[in-house]
Every structure is written in structure tokens, then in C-alpha cells.
Image (cartoon, rainbow, N blue to C red; front, side, top):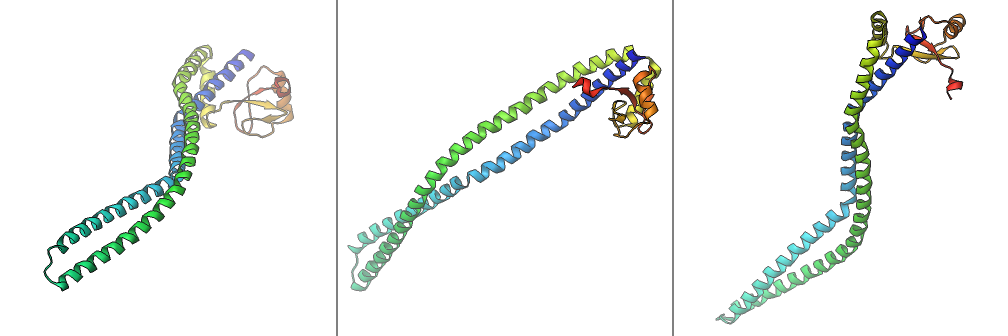
Length: 239
């Protein structure tokens, strides 16, 4: 009977491992997906200064394009001054140039302010890049550990399934049916240990007489609370 109980305990270990592996198969990809999502949010946050720097760079380019347009206009106006035939037209063109020169001065002042802010941001962007590089390395390392773990799941599952198959062949059919029935009713656990009269499956105390019998008897006993097949385990000795 001790041998039969030992086979059931080993079978339970197989089933527990297979459940863990099945859970891993589902949870690990979810974990990787959550990691990627969190890292993307972190990356976007770190790159705020870079995006702002790029926006200022675009504004500067826009300002420089406006200055070029103004310069082209002033050049054309000066060329037309040579062709004017009356004072009124001449004064209008001078006024046009004066307005263009003032606008150009305002834009150049804006460009200087933009460049000053860009210089400050460049320092922050460089620090952010260093921070992000380190975070990326760490993220990739952690991701690889999970991916390696996931890659091993199928191989480990095959090993435990094979071990389970071998055990099944050694267990009497009626005992196997009993185990499967109990396991199905108790969340995948059909065999559980007992120590100090407490069932590890349901955490309930079993009667003292049954506890004594469990330690001495070769009979297979069931927990009166959860009906799992019990076995005595001296946890102090196992530690």
C-alpha cells in the first residue's frame, strides 16, 4: 500500500507540474506583452524633451523660411525702386521694405530665443538618451529571461507527460479512477500531505484518531473535509 501511495504522490507531482507549465504557457506571453506596453510608456515619457527639441527645431526652420521669403521680397523691392516714376510709389516701396525689415528683426529675435531653449534641451536629451539606453538593456535582458523560460515550457511539458504516462501504467485502474475523480472535484489536487493533524489541501484539522491511523496504517485514507487522498509528511524531518 505504501508503494501505491508513493505512486499517487508522484502522479500528483506530475499533474501539479503540468498545471504550472500550462499556466506559464498562458501567463508568460501576457507578461511579455505587459512589459512591452509599460516600457513603451516609459520610453515616451523619457523622450518628451527630444520631442520638444524636435518641435523647436521645426519652428526654427519655419522662421528661417519666413526670413528667406522676406529677404527675397526686400531684394525685389529694391530692384523695383530703380524703376519707380513718382514719389508716392517710391515712398510706398520704402515703407514696404521698412515693414519687412522690422518683421525680419522680430523673427530673428524669435530664432535666438528658440536656439537658446534648444541648447538647454540638448543637454537634457543627451542625459535622457543615456538613461533610455540603460533601461533598454535591462528591459531586453528581463524579456529574454522570460522568453527563454517560455521556450522551455514545451520541452518540460513533454518530459512530465511522459513521466505521468509511465506512472499511470503502474497504478491499478480502480485507484487511478478514484484519484482522477477526487482531483477533478478539488481543483486538480487529488493527493495531499498532512502534518500536525492539518490537511494541506483544505487547511482543516483531521480527527486525532484518524491522524494516528494515518501515521501507522498502510490503508489509503481520505480527508473527511475535502475528500483528498492523504499521506503523512513529517515536515520537520524533510526540512
